[in-house]
Image 1: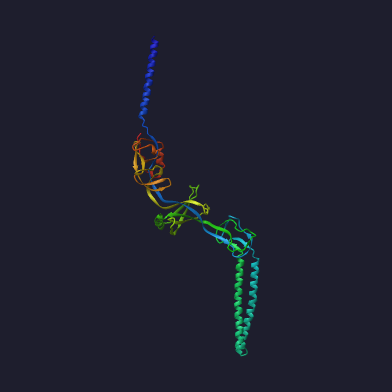
Image 2: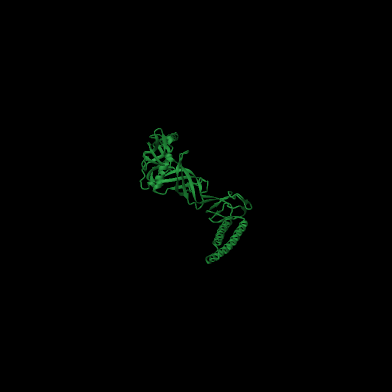
Length: 388
């Protein structure tokens, strides 16, 4: 009987202890503050470039359509399609034999007429002596002088014919007028070239190279103002290679606005030593006008749009959020400049905004200390201590 009483007493004590433990755990859980999970970012202060972004296309620095200036058979091609060539390098050879024969004929005519001119010159001198001696008449001396002048003119014509024949022979050797890269053969070896307007090959100069793009006419005055102060940097970004922009310099603004589109044409030149840019390629263009120092910057994803304009949610030290209207400035990559409404070091919600309202309790999911350490503009600022 005593044993049974002791067992009942122990059982009651276990139940009491278990109930007290559960009650304590419930009280502890109720004491731990809970809130809506959000991701935050620290408001930074740093230098931000003021940029204009648009789309452009790559153009050859210069383009030459190589044509023949004489008719004949295309006997030889000295390059391969797509090859890089230098200025003065031989590209094509037109059959030179007919032009060599023409040159020989012109030279022979020159030699014959030169000999005749020398004889006429000697005759004219002899009759001048006879005229002074009173043996020859004025009519005879005038005739010999006229013959000499006619032969002198013939020799000059022969000399011009020889020069022209040499020029025509030189046209048989077609050379590159620029440094560049050749395209495909338009006329193959062995064909007879009869039309002097026939294009044999096209050469594009790619070192350096142009990128052309258009901007709204409203941007013109701002671009010209900054261009007058310094050379403006232009970046060309090939789609799929966003991490490797090519840097060039703005060199040209067109002298008129396109009336049909309301845009102005601009050109930037790039050294393009590695030929990363290729003619007719479309690229994303970033024109940097200037740099705004000590700008207040937040991630663009923190910005919300409401009936009263743009706003953000600022996290207070007590883990509640504050509705804060802001005025936006320029945008750089994934960040936006805030001209009014925020101070460096404050925390703004970047993810989870749709689950909170003014005064909501939040729970920060990301590591705030690492955010502060990774924020270059906040290295000299002491992180704000949050309440537990």
